[in-house]
Structure formats: structure tokens, C-alpha cells
Amino acid sequence: MEENTFDPDLIRAIFNLVWKKRAAEREKNERTETVEMGVGTSKKNRLTSVNANALKLSCELLRLFVTESIQRAATIAEAEGSNKIEATHLERILPQLLLDF
Image (tube, rainbow, N blue to C red; front, side):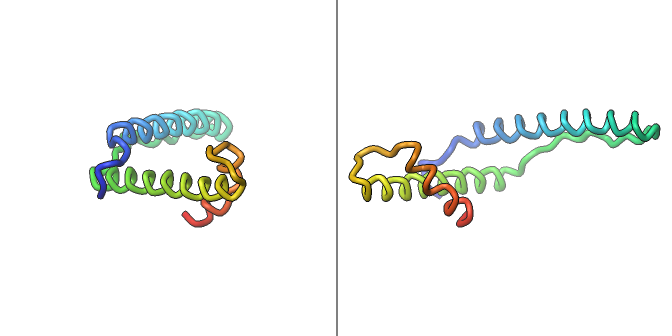
């Protein structure tokens, strides 16, 4: 993998933030379902973690995604005669980019 990649600690922090939000939403939904059903079934809340190799792979995938986005948007900007990539260029390449990834 290349040296120019995302900081694994930053990606881990983002993952943890998303996992905490989803766990809070699940807990909120389970409380409302329990009240509606009247049954007290509870699941153990376990911490979600990420393997070091999976984290490295996620960083690399994110780097590739951003690099490809910039290259495609630059191609559109160049075709329009612009020297700068603008939000409209990213908006135009986004649908196909998401399908490709």
C-alpha cells in the first residue's frame, strides 16, 4: 500500500462514531418495541471493533475512492474548459462512481 493514505486512527474514530450512533438507535427502537410487545427480551450490548487489517484495507479503499473521484471530476472540468473542480463536476460523476465501487 502507498504511504499517502488516510490515517487509520481517524478512520477508526469515524467507524466508532457510526457504531455508537447505530447502537443508540437500536437501543431506542428496542425500548419502544419492548413497550409495545410487553416482553422483556434483552440482547447483550457488545463493543464493536475493527481488525487492524480490515482498518488498513478500509483506508486504502477510501483513498482509491477519493483519488478516482478527483480524477473523474477533473476530466469533466477539463472538458468544460475549467481549471478548477467544482461541486457540479463531482455531482455529475457521483452516480457512475457509486455504481463502479
